[in-house]
Image 1 (spheres, rainbow, N blue to C red):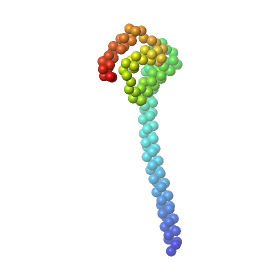
Image 2: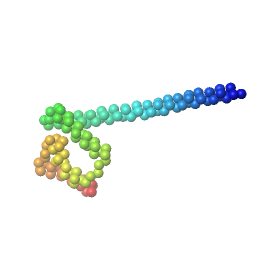
Image 3: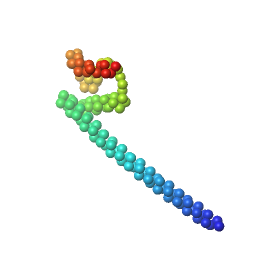
Image 4: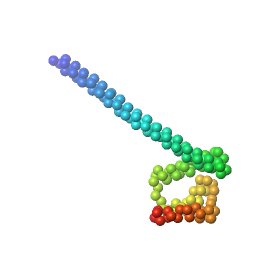
Amino acid sequence: MKEPKTKIKGWRGSRDAWLSVAKDILIDQGESAVTVQAMAKRFRLVAEDEKRVDAIRQMMIRHGFNQVEADVRAHAIYLVQLGYTSMQIKEDWENRIARVPYYMRTLAGLSPTEAEFARFRAKFTHLDSANE
């Protein structure tokens, strides 16, 4: 009588092992599909990011920066903006606008004249009340 119990236990053990392997395969396949989709999305995002950085880089080159400096400045500008966006920074409008000349000096190596900054600021006066 003990022999059938042993065979049943053996069969249940091998069945459980097989089901465990099958479950692991299904989980792995599901994770792989999600990983492949995530990687594909990441590759698309990287390609789009690089297009944007390249546009900024080309603008810098047109404004007289050499290739290396244009590349570094383009990445710095893009990554700062990306940080603002991804972190969903909410800051006082007056503080943000007051920083613009300093951002320009830091990121582009240029400082606007008072008249240039006044013209720039005037373009955004309609946002003053929207950001209060």
